[in-house]
Every structure is written in C-alpha cells, then in structure tokens.
Figure 1: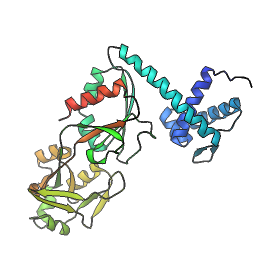
Figure 2 (figure 1 turned 45 degrees about the vertical axis):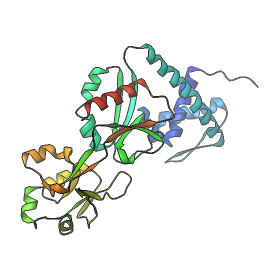
Figure 3 (figure 1 turned 90 degrees about the vertical axis):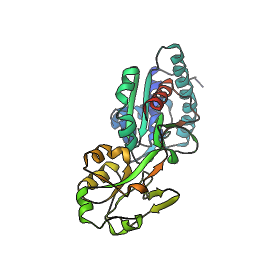
Figure 4 (figure 1 turned 120 degrees about the vertical axis):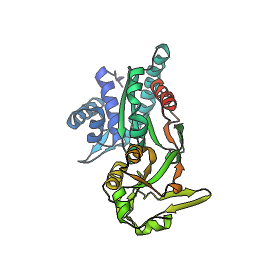
Amino acid sequence: MARLTLTRSDLGDLNLFRTIARAGGFRRAALELDVSASALSHALRGLETRLGVRLANRTNRSVTLTEAGEMLLASLETGFEAIESGIENLNLHKDTPSGRLRVNVLSDAARLAFGPNLASFMANYPQVNLEIVVQDEFVDIVDGSFDAGIRFGGSVPEEMIAVPIGADLRWVMIASPDYLARRPRLKHPSDLSSHECIGLRTGRGAMYHWELERGSERMEISVDWAIVVNETALAIELAENGGGIAYCLERRVQDQLKSGALKEVLPKWSSFGPAFHIYYNSRRQVPSALRALISFLKDEVR
C-alpha cells in the first residue's frame, strides 16, 4: 500500500477535524475557530475524500465520530499535543511569554479579578493573546478547549490543579433603603422567611443556599424565593430597585454600600467563603503565558 504523504492542507484539516470532534458539531467549532460552519463541513468532506474513509456521521445538530474517526482522533491528540509542547518549549528561549490563552471565568471573578487587572497584564505581556469567556454555567475546560478556568475554591474539579488568587471572600445580604423602610425590621435570619428574597441558581443548576455565620453559629438559609435568577448582576439590580434582599459578594456592591444605594442586611451574619481559584489540566504542560497570568493574578488580586 502506498504511503500517504501529508500536505500542509492535510495537517490543517486534521486539526479542524480534531476541533470539530471536540466540539461535537460544526456550529460550536465554527464559533471557536471564527470560520463558517459550511467551510468546516466542506473541509471535513475533503479530508474524508483524500483519506478514503468516513470519519463522522452528521445530523442537523451534531457530529458523531465513526469507529475510524475515533481511532484517528486518539492518534491526533497524541501527535498535536507533542507539536504544541514542542512549540511551547520555544518560549524557554524568549525574553517574554507569548501565545494564545483561552480562559473560562465566573462572572464574579470577571468583574473583581479580571476587570481591574487585565489592562495591566496586557501592557506587561503584549505578546500574549487572551480570550476570556465569562460564563457562570459550569463547563469542562478540557472539552471546551480552554487553557484554564476561574471558579470559587470549593467548586474546582478534583483532578485539576488549582491555585488561589486573592483572599477568602466575604458574602453579605443587601437591600435598598426603600425596601427596608417599608418592610418589617429584621432581627434574626429566621425573619427572612417573611421577606422578599432573591434566589440565585449556581452554574451547576442547583439553588444557592445562603450561608450565614455569627461567631460559632452557622446557618444555611433556603426560603420560598420571591424570584430566582442565575446572574449576580441581575440580583443586585433587583435589590437596588427595591425588589427584595439579595445575597452576594461584598466587593460586588462596595460602591453601592458606600453611596447608600444599598444597605447591608443583618451585617453580623455575614460569612466568608473560599477565594477565587484559577485551575488547569494537570495532564498538560503549563504554557508560559498561563504561568505568567497565574503569577500576575496572585500578585495583583487582593
């Protein structure tokens, strides 16, 4: 049998096939690669024609690999990881880190850790290209082709390497002065059951139970929520407009608390939770750009 000689086009299309397989469909892969879904479909069809074997079964919504496609993907993962590792090793001979980083970030972390600091990072590391995806829904960063993720410390998958950035975070209950003036006075967390409380659904889909503490006392609050949202910013906006009591990180509302637009509810019952953690795949070589980002965030986030 004649040996297949790979061309530059073949290598490019093999990498496209790898991306399509990881994404599970043309649309998601097209968004990641910033090309059209039809162009990816055409490239895959051409690759299959040149190889003489069908690699994937297509439907309108998804792409599933054939047995041949599964075998090829397993080999490609090993081969491309070796190529990527070799290219990454070139950074050892450079004065400054470079390359592309994709990071999946919790919205709270985006506002508190990334927003105030990314401009400085970009100025210090101009050869690093960042793509930040702000997403409260929990995703598998490996399947999503992310180099790293940022979540609260207690929610990082065990198989990942996690590095804390900043200190533990203070959680508070907040409401507008108008709301508090027209509702019964709160003396104890048990009084929350007679108030309009704004529930928050976590990125995993579960309801977040408010964790309160006062000295050695610990309480976990779950009431009949007046409204449930899945975004901290919306919960805060509802509270600002008199919609009820919200539970969030103190730093998310520090300006509103300072101006008086919001007031802390039962301040003696605030609690501390784990810091933000940046995490990454323990089985992959850590890119120099990611090492630089981790070091920078550890120094800058307080």
